Length: 635
Image (cartoon, rainbow, N blue to C red; front, side, top):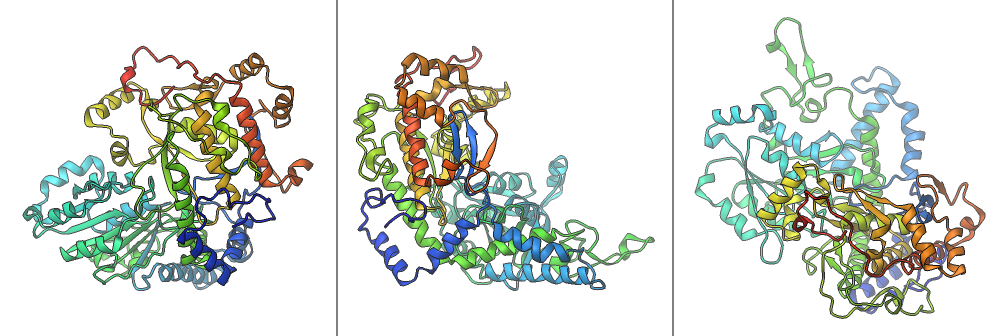
């Protein structure tokens, strides 16, 4: 398997472990049968807005390498061009067929809606566009089943409900906050299902809860993540839907994290079908700027004889100024739940993002992501300084959250190892450590900061808005949790523990994939050395580069002239914030230097800096009113 010669000549044979695995053979065979999918993916990369973008960091200019796809997708020039050329010229408000633009726009929005329903396997279901992601979609479902209420009214309304009227909602152990907190603040009784011994949803516990006599004769609903946005672990949604339906519960799934990469086939009405799907199309490639999606079985809609969740223009057939009871609302769910001017361009953009997904094909996406997930795990697991969170043996997306520890007894020079004939992208960046008694890991946001500053890699540090799951993954018990909460109340939000998250989507280039793994190997060996170069803000959790300290270490260590020249040429100490593009406005060397060579230069530059820094830096000071036992990371 070779890197695309258009981007570089690095041979990945030495880089990918066990190239003879069944999975790689399958990918090779598939590619040999049809290269169409790979060509389409190459086209997709060529359409990425921001491809070739350079920006300044404290260590010089860096190409932007995006690895935060789980948070949000990237824009595509193709989609933007389509909107500019085909949508905006004929744009007008809907709710009329009397004008050309009104009629054209209305038909366009209708076609976009029907296309999305078709792609999700729910042509006869109700599709409601709401807000900007799954959070709004989940909230809308709560509204249309009649359990949403303002927080200041909740306790008062609960007192007036009989037990048999109150919904029971079952949620899973690795829900995003949006699929947990809003249910807790609704009128439903929320039952949280924990993890089994494998770190997966405890199906036995769920079964027992569903059969509990205390929930008999009450409306039941399960709302579960189809895939974790932290670990990438996929839920067996079919088995889960079957279990819920066998006990008379509606089966609802949050596809926010997995939706851009897996096939969504609603099959409502089947024992293994879904009754509602929540989706964040902004996480799709080409999807930024799209609305949230709620696709639901019409049987879930409880407002048929009442006004819609939001009353306004476009929801009514008749209104007068005499009596509110005379108002006639539309019967069609999609009309009555789409008040006011709809998100017209946003809906069309969502349909185009779905078109891109269908164009690439689910089989290719699944296969490519399995390759990336397997390869990344084989790279991470032997590295004793990197701890990947969650179960590593089950089906997953290539989404990884991890902790990075400092090597305890190592020589960084020896660990760096010799260069291979393939350059720094090979095993030269994989360090074999001896027994390592781990101390505290590096702060998750510090690792993300190093990835950005040293390599231009866009990652995410924190807890990924999945606090309860994070407690389990980091083994934070209730006592410690409440102590951290007290510190946060004092204003020290920086004490919150967390991790670093990256993702490898099917359309990521092999050069970028190899580079990110090499960068992580580097940080696992040298990352702790950079701690003195950054100031930690205990209030916000931000890490700020300390330019003076950096210059001091450079002068103190008296780097080799060649290394200094190399660093200067790459813009050490450049002012941050400015950005450029290799394809337009970059300097001549930027245009002619291959991507792989630039990635190699970043790694070499980072190593030169690391070797100028103390191998075991002294820890930073801690505010007097912070209990050191609450600091779960290295500073």
